Image (cartoon, one colour):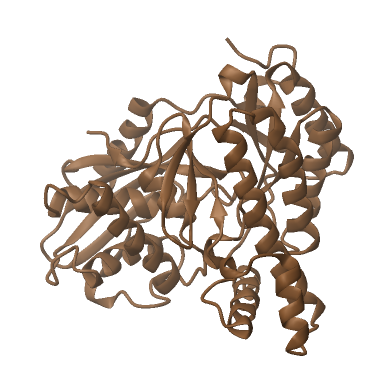
Length: 414
């Protein structure tokens, strides 16, 4: 059954992800055509949508991410000569480099995320110092540049593969997965030079089917919260604007620098330690700080964490349909205070709400990418039609749609 009968053409709706056997087979086929022999196995990790709590993972805030059914698949085989050989279905030319040559800023592009994982696992003592290298072939069902954490899916799939191939029996228990989260964050921050927080890696490695996570980025606590969308007649619709976002062009890092400066001025480890926006503004004013940009960034960081906490309470109480106003307020804050939205994102959010979505907001790093809408099941055709019409009217890229069903964490397939 599809909810989209009478709506947009099914070719425009990625309502169901590709099957796991098909995706795993594509990774294996790419491995066979690129390298001699067969892989030692195939592993995968999910993309991510974040219900609410955007741009607060690096300020100690609360966020509610969930794993998407779309996954990144890696066929992996160990080597003994100290080389990394990497190939992707999106970039079929094999990249090759020495393990010992990996360093901040090298390699560049997508290989940095995989090479960085190897570097970080060695640095954290989770791989031997004399690690012999690895061959990796990548097939991804997670849309690239859509703000759905394709990079963390790439990192975490390899981390799980290497943990199974080289780790102890406890490598993938809860504590072991938390250690892999730390390594993957280091890979992205220190080798790929993307100043992201740890939300994406945490959900990729700790996700639970049918749940989102309440991630407390101050304490590190990770608590699964049931997200029974179907039972409540609701759909989380991810709308990919197909306007690619870029997190390494300085915009993401610039905002992180501002909020970290605010924390230093306020003499707190993170802005999570500030009780309210009013408290922060008053204390900054007492220090003679009245920079409008700094105050806007701080207002978002503190208010977004409060919204995420409120959303978590609604989920605990089973009041999913009441999430809409929180999603709307989140988008307003991201657009006006954090200034990370875009014409394409604002357009699809506005169109979805006007067509009956209970709430909608941009999701991910911003500057393009995707939005998320909470929609009653019966309203999905009207919402998708309205979004497509609004983008066509403004001559913007044609969006595509994903059904955000909360899926499982990174794991071995074969």
